[in-house]
Length: 272
Image (cartoon, rainbow, N blue to C red; front, side):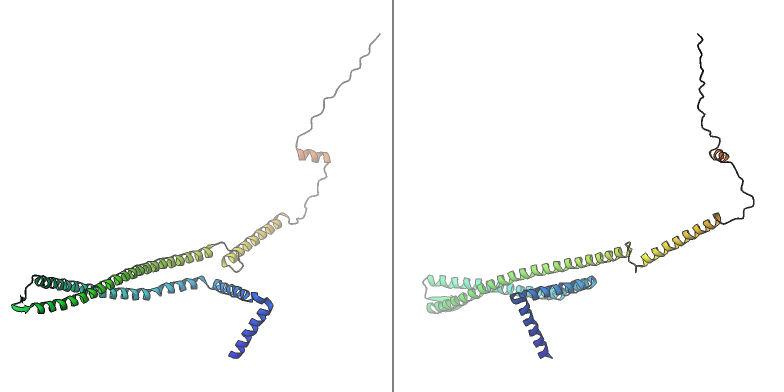
């Protein structure tokens, strides 16, 4: 089965190379992006919001782990500071003792008394050499501890800033998701309350039914009125024959056109 899949894939690649030549890779890449975009667009918004919410929630374990690491580093840094403080105190005491022995040797004496015991110049000088070598090693160790303390403190500050940024970003994302959920619900309400005209809408069907009922009632009322006004009746009296002049006079009432003034022509005969 695997061999068949491999052969089929190679055949498809070969066919694409023959059809598109050197542009085959570009065509395949564009097609892949188109398919990916189509798939993403087909995913419901509710699922995408839930997915984003889960991704934000997955940040919580990482934040808690960072908080644990920071807390542990803070404790270790405190311990390191205590160690450095103790080393500085020891170094200060060692320096004071070295300076005392050096001062005694510079006085030029041959016998020195310390803690009720006497020591020769050679013994004091040898002890000074040993103390000085230990002090230099202690100073190097103290410098190393101080440098390490400074580096860890700097890293700790960076970790704290990163943790603060992560917490702030998570809170912002949670707020954004809450707003998206509220907006989605508002869109659903708006879609449900809008004046839709689709045939499969319950609202549209109800409006269509009411309009049909109103039309049928109007038609029935009109037919009933027609039956009342235009039903055939049996004539009981003969139709009166009336002159057209009387009909015109009855139609227009007593309104009669004004008669023009008659002119009387008087012929005058002149008698010669």
